[in-house]
Length: 535
Image 1 (cartoon, rainbow, N blue to C red):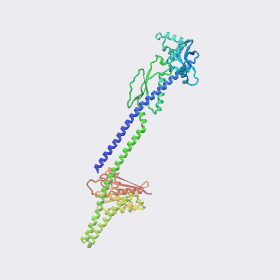
Image 2: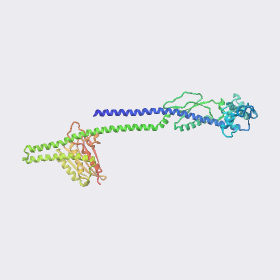
Image 3: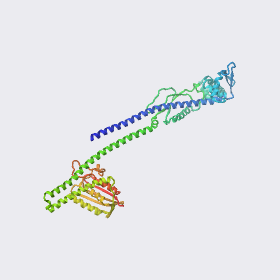
């Protein structure tokens, strides 16, 4: 049996270990997959954020160009070459500023109408030309040169003064242009890099939130392109992107400001990944906990069944010995009456009959205990409570136990509060006192010294029995009230018992609404304390 249980436990532990390892392996792989998806998603979000910045950049160009082209100082004339057909006829666009007519820009009526239709109904000429310039670099360059020249002419005196004061600055330097001219096409807004960073950050946060990603990040800016890419379990970064969308117009036609590169850096992405995996992780933990709990319950059940089987075997062996003793004694007494002419000796006859009677009483007591346990286990015991003289009951139990035992016994009974009567079930409460006193006598060495005390405390009737016996090991104090449990005595079986008495006592006490407790020290004795509500 032990080998089978050992084999079962080993198999269960191996299975549990396998379940835990599988769940851990599965969670690790799920994290890797989610990390890979996270890296892909943040790069997609970065691309979308860059596209949003690019759109803002071109929108700002539209606003400035349309406003400048509507200026009365700008003259726009569109001529048609008559030799072309109606659809493909060639258009010549003249753009002049302050009587300066630059070289014309050539296009066709088909192209012009295409961009006009792209804008919507009834677009103005500045609107169509602005839209066309995004796809026609020569037209955008013409706007840059024309409007830039116009800015220079409008601020010529300030530029000349600045160049005279700074002889090391070239005369056609755009740096001088930017430092003098405000509101021109080459002007950069103040703190534009910080503004660009904030704008890109806001757009990226918005795109990440659309993907349910709430991980903190920062930007890494550089003037040189660095294509190296780092990604591990505790670190993520997007690909690097060139940033040239500084919120104002025509910057890409200048060499004044160097282009810089940017990528988003996530230093602790695991928190966002684990948060997104929270349901799966909680489910895995619950499955592991359920598996551990189920296997733990199975092991406890098997051990309990094993313990019950062992206690049942011990009970049967003890009960067999207990039943054999009175039967054997009565058999010998009857045989003596029959074979040794004891019937002619009244004194001997009386002694044999008394012995048989005592053994029958002992046999009845054993059967009653077994029946009582079966009855309270099936909840068949019904208490009949009535006022009972406690001194009379305890006194009769003491006399009965003294007669049954062959030991030298000294029992002291103290009714400290002069309690007269208590409302209890006479039969079963007498059995409680009898069982506790019987155990105290059986497990005490001679001379047996027992003290019985009754008192009242907070509306409870307190009854205690203290002996000078062997004591109960601490490991068994919580088990002695279990059915069939007996404190092991090694190879010595000098005290007989069924292991049912104390479990019956606890049941009866609790049926009265009370409690029972025990205090014990090895070789110093034990004290059982019963507390029952008076009312």
